[in-house]
Length: 418
Image (tube, rainbow, N blue to C red; front, top):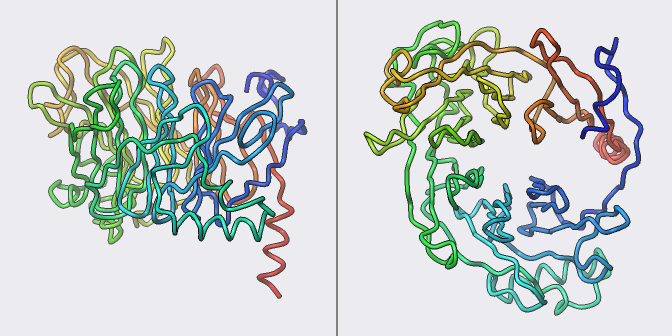
């Protein structure tokens, strides 16, 4: 990432990077819904609509391989009975752990083990059907090779009443915990009872997001400093029942457990755990993702920037209103903020909304910060990844663009137009 951004500090226009890259035949039989890198950036996992997850490793030659570093069988397995929507890695302190969120209303915890063996996670008939399709498409050697896996299912969390749309492990200092969001509008926080025995997880907290807007006196506010000040006005979206679309943990070591949650109603809110009330409370309502007429549009992704010595937090959100936003939230001193959510502030610090900056008005689907929280990457349907960085005035500018391979997109478009 550093090599990509170490060009001129104030370019007249974004650079179009032409760098070495590797085109990977992902091997999935359906769309790839999510890609997640591990803590060190030397492994990543892909989640697909064909119900499988595949893990890739970076070898000594700088090439990405799925399976053994010298080649061999793909490191792939069936992870759900429906489409796998999201996948994420835990901190390596807890081992090589993956969590997958599926359309089958469940979250599955996986642990990597040395050696190849038959996975205990999926029934034989499902594996046979999948491996048979993979053989026809990828010329695999045999179905028995496909059933071998180094990943073992440790636990299944199936409290969600609808499809699980997002999952993310908590920062290391909060312990082995993870948050899940589902289409029923509920965020559930789980904690491992024993990090040495990953078979048992307890439901440690629940955040009800559906219907919150009905209880708040909405109005045409100028931001998210107090609960109830919505940039989209007081209208309640018909998409509210679609539930949670994304979430992101605050990684600050000196902050209580804090989450930013994005909903399909266009609402993005910050929730903080209150030790006194022993519950999660909404402390800041960020400006909605909505059209100029105030019609709410869904939030597609949220990303809380890692905090390295700053006195404030940066949160990026993107939505169906074709806007990429960066929200600035300042750390205050005790006392809480304004509005109904003020009681949720931590005893030693509070969060105060300062403002929002619009970065991009194109179709953005995903956003992610770098390790230091100084560069924001965004991507959409245009096949371009944009990198954003703030200048000396604190204004974000696009410093470079990475153009992906759009050959497949053009071919698909040509087929549709025939």
